[in-house]
Length: 359
Image 1 (cartoon, rainbow, N blue to C red):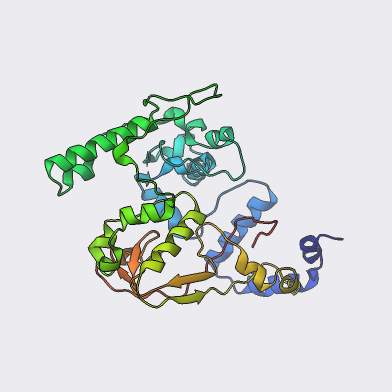
Image 2 (spheres, rainbow, N blue to C red):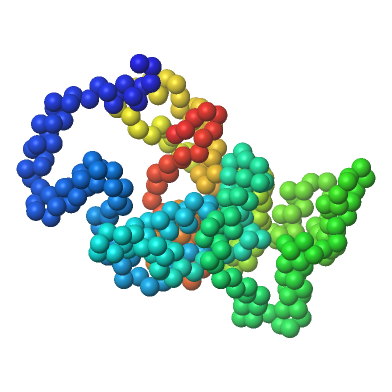
């Protein structure tokens, strides 16, 4: 048999496993035996129960409201799975599944469909749209409310002139997302697909795009790179990781302090028993060259005063969440701005397929 996983599965010592099972079963208490019997009966009789062995099931029984933020970014299968799970968990005493949507629980979805839809790797626009919650059977039972008042603008410390300018920009952005702006058709195009961006929103182009945008956003960074408020109020957003790397490299070159280079320690996940060949098939140099979304590159170049961003939730109560921006582990965004924290070495597993490799 050439399939390694199947070969390992079939090579198990059945007699040894039976003996181990007998010894482990003797150590079960009455509650554990009850659970064991229920699970095995469900397996042998193909009943298809969903079984929770924690307090989560009890929590769901007493939960009256579930709020799901950024819903448009999630695949519709996630919502449908939650629906089926809740119906099964909240079944009646006679074992009948609750036929109400989400088992009768009230669910509030939040989000904006003008932002990012579910990410379907290497698939078409139609596949992405079909993965949206709007294509799910759940959508027909959703009551849609549209909120249009900009609460952040109302609470902002800006004067009336600045607020009016921001309100106009917000309206222009919404009109862009709603497709209300006049489209322009270029030469040899059958359909108009371009728009004109107002001049006050454009950055003057001198031929070096990276230098132009950095000088516009961080024009005096060499004098203010140590000021928390200066960095907090500025950011450059780009859809491509490669572009972000170029911008970071250029901004780092403007800072006066000595550059330090920190290396990651990359390895193949120990997912099988006999994986001695992995070191030969996937050498360290090859692993170091891989780049994945949500994971830093192998080389991390920093200077004292460089702003960095967390990519994992470490301590939400302390404000250490995915996306938090910090300097020398001093938080400068959110409610915990100004606090100094310790960031340990973190193991980051990647499940993204690249170059035929699935770590």
